[in-house]
Image 1 (tube, rainbow, N blue to C red):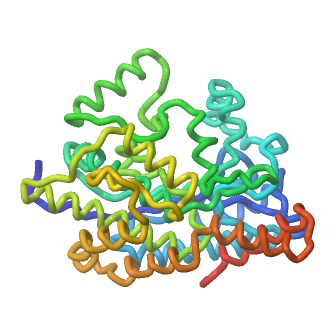
Image 2: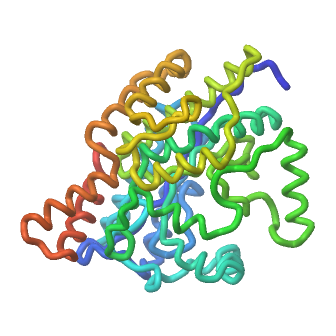
Length: 378
C-alpha cells in the first residue's frame, strides 16, 4: 500500500422526482424538451433514471466539500429552472408521498429494459431516489479495508438522511421506506467482508462467469468499490431534501473515512462487527431515523443518537479541521434540532390533518413542503 494519504476527492449524485405543479403528483411523461434543455445546460452531469419521472445529477470531481456544495447548488438550480419552465418542480425526496409506481413509464434504455426483464416487479416498483457519495481512494487494497470498517457507520448516515416516510399515499411508519423497496433486489444491503481486493474480484468474477451479471455495477450494496472510478461509493442514504443536509452528511462521510485511514496509518483500526449487528442498526435507522437511538455495539446497548453523534464528532474533529469542513460537520446539529426531511413531511401531514384537511389534501401539502425545501437556499 502507498504511504501517501488519499486525496479524498468527492463526487455526489442526487436523484430527484419531477412533480406537476398543479396536481403535485409525479409527471408520468415529461416532454423530451425538458431533458434536452437540462443536458444542454449540464452536459453529462445530468442523466435520465429508470423511470421517466426521475432525473439524476452528478457533481464534477470536487477537491473539497465547499466545491461539492457549489456544484450541487448550480445543478439543483438548473433543474429547478428548467422544470419550472415546463410547469414542473423537482423534489429531493426518496419517495413521492402519494403517486404510485404502477402508473409510471420507464425510460427507454437497454440497461433499464434488461433490468426489468430480469427483476420483474422488484425493478418496476423502484420509484425511489437515493444519494450516492464517491470518495476518491486510489489504492485498491485500502478501498477494501476501509469498506470493511466503514460499514459500521452506514446506519448513522442513513438515520440523518431519511426522506421516505410515505408510500403510495400511506404513512408507512418508517422514516426510510425506500430501502424496503430497494432491498427486494439481489446484491443489496450491508456489504460483504473481504480480506483483500483480489478476494473481492474473485467473488465478482464467479457471478460474471456464471452469466448473472455483466460487471460489478450490478452489485448494489450500501457501500461498494466503484466499478467506474477509483472511489468508495456510499449508497445507503436517502436523498436529502435540503441542500445543507446533503453537504453536512457528505462532510461527515469524508471525515469518517479519513479518520479510519488515520487509524490504519497508526497501526490501529475500527473494530469489525458482524453484518448481523450492523443490519440491526440499519433497521433501527430505517424505522426511527435518530428518534430511538442505535446500538453502541461496543457497549451492547441502545444509546441515544445525540450521544453517538457527539462521540463521532470527537473522533473526526482532527479530520474535519484537516479537510476544512468543521462548519459543515457542526451543522449536523441542525438536523437533530429540526428533524430530517421525513420528520418534516410527517409534521406537515399531521398539522394539515389536525386543521381538518382530508388525507389527500394533507399529502399535497407535504409535496409543497418538499418543493420549498428542495429549493431552499438556492
